[in-house]
Image (spheres, rainbow, N blue to C red):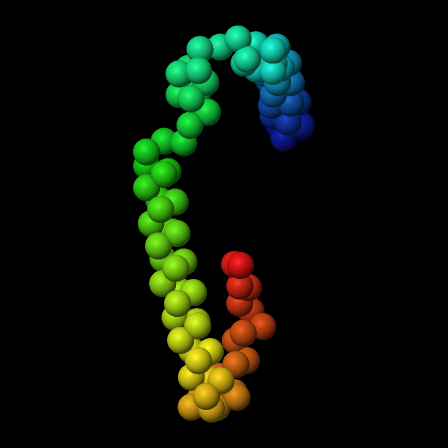
Length: 93
């Protein structure tokens, strides 16, 4: 019974919040906002931007590494058994 009460309470609060946000964040209202306020509201935090950049650099290193491995495999320097992991790897480009 406690779970049902929790779920109904959560649903009611979410419903009220979503209804309020719908009017607050309407496209016509956003167009009328100061561009600096829109930027501040919609922008990612500096921490998130830094994390994204760090992950982008790590991805570049990993992609370069996989290309190096493929070069060795293509030249026959490594056995075919090494390629069994490739089915789990998705190329990001």
